[in-house]
Image 1 (spheres, one colour):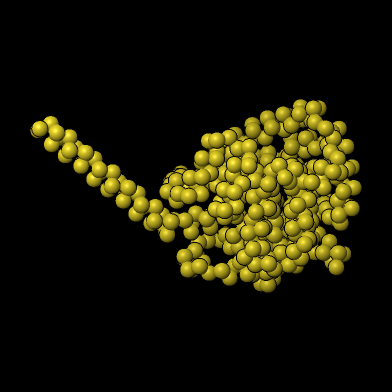
Image 2: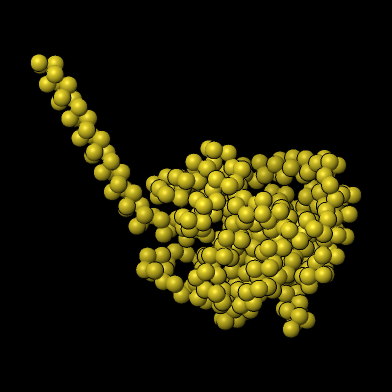
Amino acid sequence: MLAGLMDDNTLLIMRRLILRSLLILLILELAFRIIIDPLYFYQIDTYTLDKSGYNFKNLYLKNNSHDNKEIDYLFIGSSRIPAAIDVSVIMNYSDSIVAVNAGRGYLTGSINYWALKNKLDKNPDYLKGTTVITELQGASSFIYSQNFDKTKFSIHPQFPHLILPHVTNKILFNNLFKTDYDFGLKVRLFFLHNLSLYRTIPFLKSKLQELVFSNNNSALTNEGGIKTDETSIQNARTLVTQIAKQRIRNHKELFPLKESDLENSMFAELHKIIIENGGNLILIDMPLHSVQQAVFETEYNRKNSKVFHKWLQKNNIPIIRVKDFSYNDEDFPDYGHLGTHKREEFTRKVYNQVLKVNNEMD
C-alpha cells in the first residue's frame, strides 16, 4: 500500500513538472514571438527597405509605410550584389531616390520569386516604375537558370529560414510535400515556420558571438551574409577554388543550353512578374576573380552565351557592362566578392549606366 502511495506521489510530481515545463515553454514561446520575432524577420528579410538600424516603431508598431513606398531601384541576386553595390551611394544623389539591395548569399530564385509575390500581394504597385537589377554571371551565364516548375520551392539546405518572411503557412505547407527535400529538411522547415524558440535562439546566439568575437575585416562588407573575419576569408578562397574546378569538370557532361530552357526558367518567371507589374529588368556583367571567371570561359559556356544573348535580345533585356572599371584579382579578398575599396566606384558607374539604359528605353 505504501509503495502504491509512493508511485501515485511520483506520478503526481512528474505530471506537475511536465505541466510546469510546458507552461514555461509556452510563456517563452509567446515572449519570443512578441519580442524577438520582429527583430529576427527584420534581419533575415533582404527586402527590408531600411537596413541602417533597428527602428522600434517599424519593428513593433506595425508600420506598413515601407510596403507602400515606391522603390526606384531593386537589386537582387547573390552576395556578389551587396559586395559590389552600395545603395546608400545611389540614394545620396537625391533625397527622393529609394534603392534596396536584396542580394544575399544562398538566396535562391524561388525565394526571390515568393518575396516579390508577397510584396505585390501587400502592394500591387510595388514594382510599378521600379528598375530591378540582377547579376550576369561572367559574360556568358545567368543566375536562376533552373526550370521554374521544378524549383518553385527550392531552398538551400543550410539556409531554409531565408524563405520564412515571404511565404504564408498555407503556401508553404500546401507545397512542402511536393518537393524533393529530404525528410529531415522538411521537419526542420516545419519547426522553423511554427516555433519562434527554434528559429530565434540560434539567431540570438550568432548575434551574441558577433558582439563578443567581432573581428570584421574592412576589406569586405558584412552585408548579404558575407563573412569578413580572416578565417572565413581563407576558407572562402579554398571553397571558391574547389567549386570553380568542379564546375569546369562538370561542363564536359552537361547538355548545351536551349532557348526552351530559358523560356521555362526561374529567370524567365521573375522577368515576367517584373514586366507585368510595371517594372523593368536589367542585368549587370559583374566583375569576377580569375578563378571564377575561368568557369565562364569554357567551350560549354561560350556556346550557351550565344543562345542566352539571343534570348535576351528577343525579350528586350539589356546588359550593363562597366567598361571603364579596372580591377584585378587583388580586389577580391576572398576570391568571391569585390572589396570595399572598389565598391563606391563600381556603384556609381553602374548607376550611371542604369540611368543611360532607362533613358534609352523610355
